[in-house]
Image: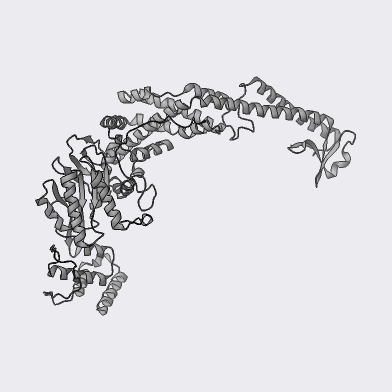
Length: 619
């Protein structure tokens, strides 16, 4: 039987926002890119669902955001109604806790391997639907009321199951003890015979003790030998040989049978066998009756699971201060104080620094500069996640948000190779960039992070510049392009739809401080060596890098010179030092000047002094 399969539904690919698997991994929609686990993903942040079915549906929605504005708004209306009505929402959550996995149970019914406990779980799930319908009907909201009117709780089915099965049936349907009394007259007669036979056995045991004088005589049963009278070895002499026939010898006892006991054994075992067979037959009939309701159960499951996700979205919006996004037909973006939902979730409350993102109809590309670790990638992913959340019907992490309905999302984020397919890191980079250039439209969203870094400086810079120009002239997609090629910031002079923005950073007492704030215009420098210092690179490496940087700056290596094929980092260049101290001594003085002795223990201060002495000796 294929009754567990739901009716196939056709749909056009163009009904959903398109994202390649690499895009979904880069944006960490359902699992962390580093651990492969749920924690650290957008799914982890949004999943406040109560049922297992709800979690599965939320994953499906994240992988297939809507393009239909009407369907998006229908979801938003449900979320808004549940957000506004706390008590209805809580009543629904309490009832959903009693709903088992209807999708899984329907499948087991169709396969014919559902057990009595699972059928009872199905009945309890149907019973839990009634208070959900009542809560929706009493909400006073027309959207919620209409939704509740479309839910069929399958009351007759639930009643037939609960009237047939006992309250706590065993797992196996073949061992009996699953059907209620009163369901079958024949079954009740068999049970009466069984109960009467067991009472007769108890009476016989008492009478035989009195007749024989054996106080520890007992009547027992096992599957191999049936019923027997057991007497200990010490009392064998008291056994009446004219009535007892030896059946089995044990180490410490003897077992006997009598004609009277044998007769009742046949009656009891026959009643038990017929009772068990009849119970299984009745259960099979019930299971077949339930099977006829599978389409209705599947529809009920779809309604309840969607409601579960709507409630989760409402809870997210309330707990995390998400706003209801609106949509623009003019291809403009206006996000006020937007936040990255996952990063915000892992930081202490209130510590995340929000940022605006405003791109009018005439702006298609933001060229983003600034130091590593300053938040460029977070800012880029933030927009993509806000757009995806908006198009699945969720509210979004911002004070306000106005967005176009994107048809596709493309990313080129992170450095990774594909050894299985024989692709280097740079080949993967170019392949992902090509996907966007070939398939993006003016309604798409493109996120490019550090394009061209996998090859020589001038090659990379030239490719990055050409890609930006192609996106600007030919594609017109909304694009966030992060780069360390500061020379590219001059493109705003020739490309009217491109604007420069940068992530703010400042340097105080030789220390780099990230502002995590997006500001207009290009960044003045990359602060690469400062970031390397934060990463803990050896002091010798940092000194050598600083020396090389000065050489490059002295010879004008930062200016693009098409005739020059290779930068000579190690050629001797005369650099005039104004300060007679060596560079490494200057660094040590800077470090000493920044130490706050009030925050150090005497032992820590002694260790610092020892480190400084060792550094000077090395020089």
